[in-house]
Length: 101
Image: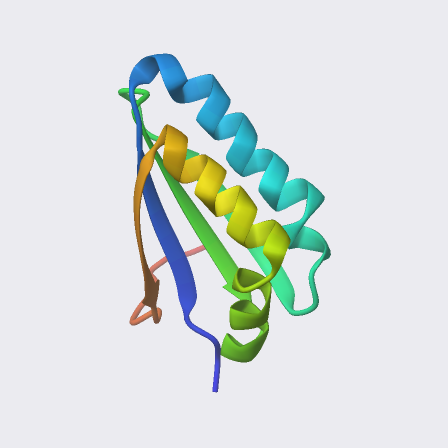
């Protein structure tokens, strides 16, 4: 069974924008992308500059849970939550439509 995609929405004051985006990007680049089971990640920024969306795909739910329970991830999430509010959920792709060739 395919692992669901983790989507996290982060909201923050506009003056924290750079700090929050840098912290999320650093966490992904320096830690998450090097973990067993990591497949991909995308970081989106809202046009108004006060929301970010992070999409993370891992190979299995067990690998995702293992990463989320590491001391490094727990500390990083605590630090990010001091800068921004977040809510996350797991999603399964229902459909995807692309333009024909």
